[in-house]
Length: 235
Image 1: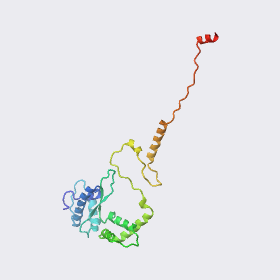
Image 2 (image 1 turned 30 degrees about the vertical axis):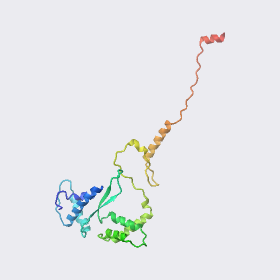
Image 3 (image 1 turned 60 degrees about the horizontal axis):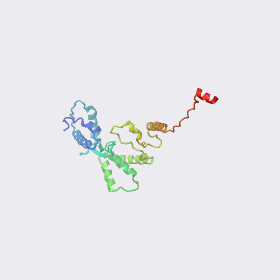
Image 4 (image 1 turned 90 degrees about the horizontal axis):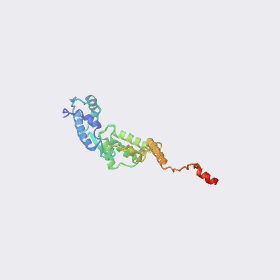
């Protein structure tokens, strides 16, 4: 199965595919095929142009193979997240399970960090903990350490930080940039310094155009007296 065309390029697809939901599910099937072939010791890989077997194959047959040696399937996971773009398109994350950046493992630890340590586990919490640590080496110990770390970070105000705005996907008109609101930033940061300067320049131009205009009185110049007026004054 792994000897077909394009099978060596599946590793790259696992790395950066899956930003959108439909792409994530299509790449998830390719990644499962790749992991299944890896566990069957299939070491024949095509070397077409544009493929990097020297970088991906040692990693697949090394730490990733050891991680999934006891698993019967389910090597990847697709998680839907909030839209990452301003057009509100669906977004998702494709990840290898039980890895150092496993999202479900991190969210389970975060829920335990928010929970009162004196309370007993409910059946739902027990199920989530079992799913997150079932095939993970030292999973319970790592979960306790991560939960305690997140509990300390929550006390320092880490969860109160402002997240970045969604990425822009449409071309922006520079003439409309000054009509937007200020971005939300932390208290110790200045919001949009270039935009503030542009607001000041626009304010000065508006004040200059709306200034009251005072009409200056011109000095009156006496007209020269003609000869007829002089004769009348003499008469």
